[in-house]
Length: 426
Image 1 (cartoon, helix red, strand yellow):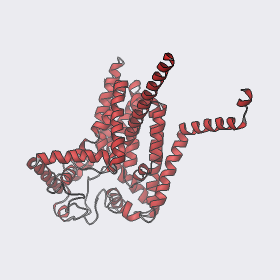
Image 2 (cartoon, one colour):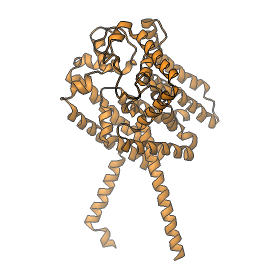
Image 3 (cartoon, one colour):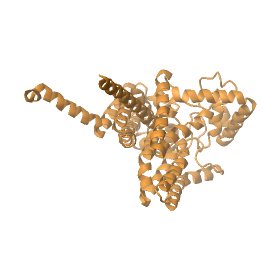
Image 4 (tube, helix red, strand yellow):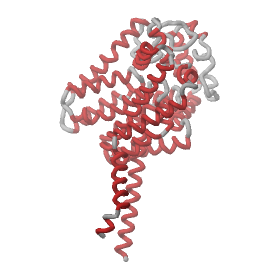
């Protein structure tokens, strides 16, 4: 036996297994693998697809060009007037504008910097997935979710598109990471930072803002469960969020002489998904400004958005059954695009993981369930693309991994019980 243990091949195998295990658990390795996957995808897409797949029809890039060209925050679509806009929230547009200022508007160097930054942000998200997975769902679930996020080339491709998706996913993952720490703390800085995160997240992807009232409610419940009253801390966190949003709201009021807290395009988004022929449509309607800017140019931004919103509401009022059918179809599409044979099982596993987590962990798992319930709601009633799901995919992967690990643990326990029963009978 002693000689067997001294066998060089067995010792090398054991050493390799220890190194492999350490690498799989390592945040640095997870980060590097995720970054390499995303850079590899970029190498396949650039430079041949620089204009058609990244810059063309990109609202953030167009606004960034307008900023650095001296026209201010304006002109989200080509062939439209250079007039102020509130179609998109400001964070990602100004980030691109800063890059354009350094290395040129619509340049190849600017694109590499912008999408390279997205790759880094997405790789950092992989590390956060690893940490919150280990903390909230167990080491195996956290490792599995982080490695799927890191290695899946679909995630790599979506994360490097010239959009706010990677930044939004990072902000939401960070919020989920911070929530338990904020709940356990009676110190002002953590609560203030969380409020600031909510404000910046909302200025990046407005839909993220819909989650933060529920997160604050969860914080209040979590503190009350511990016998603490977080009233002042909670109000401070909410106040910081509002103060972070306020400059943009003031800008919109001064520009449009109307209260527009974040964006003015909800009417347009509602109409895109709810109009005559929407059931058969597989793309934007013909008079969407990217396709035909005539109506947008004639009316101006706010009247155009109001007209489209009224048209969408009129359609819904006239065809309520079709609206419900369209919403159901959008709901299915949200959870299954771009490949239902892959995403339908994964989404179902995420929902099963949420149910299992609520059953086993109670209130501690509620933020993850809220992400699945609340974030997609606006897309059910307007319109959706698979990329709109990207910000919540870290939570989905964690819950799906938890469902899989829980199922395997139950199966293993049953097999062990049967084996023990068989041995006792023998």
